[in-house]
Image (cartoon, rainbow, N blue to C red; front, side, top):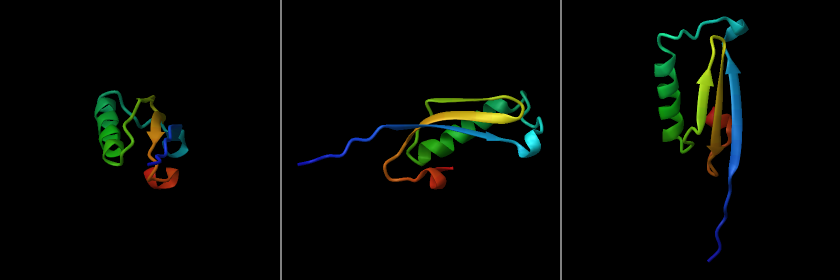
Amino acid sequence: MGQSLSNVMVHFVFSTKRRTAWLDNAWRHQLHNMIGAILEKRGAPVIALNSVQDHVHMLLPLPKTVTMSDLM
């Protein structure tokens, strides 16, 4: 019985509109938890997630059953 193995790691970066510093330290941890929970439900557990005031970085495995555009 054959099987297909895949391990595609993706680094996503997205920013706030016009790079405005909207991501506040007071609730950034909650934002990270929310993003992580959404990606976990989609089958892409977050390996690393961090942000500064105007952008977010995420490293995660791309599931075999979901396209990058659908995941984001």
